[in-house]
Length: 89
Image (cartoon, rainbow, N blue to C red):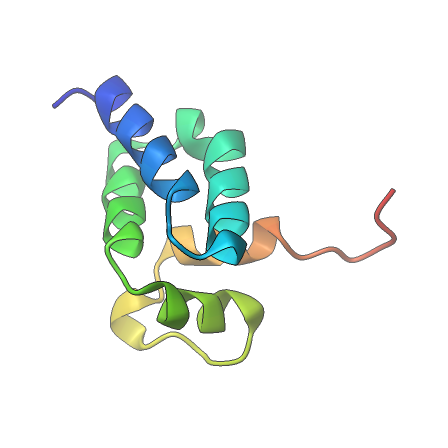
């Protein structure tokens, strides 16, 4: 499968999580960044999309630290994407 097809599939999966909060968190990140992610980051993102919503939501919300095997650069990018240091306008 070529990278363009992977990106389209990832976009659909990110917006169809089953948990609306996860749709927003992952969908917005994917919309903003998927086109610039290299192939190895797409692998990490697809693996993240395979995980249960409840676990990933706890990691993204800061309620729990992700286990080492899931603490990837893409997960850290998603977390950073949704953090704000100043006022949101």
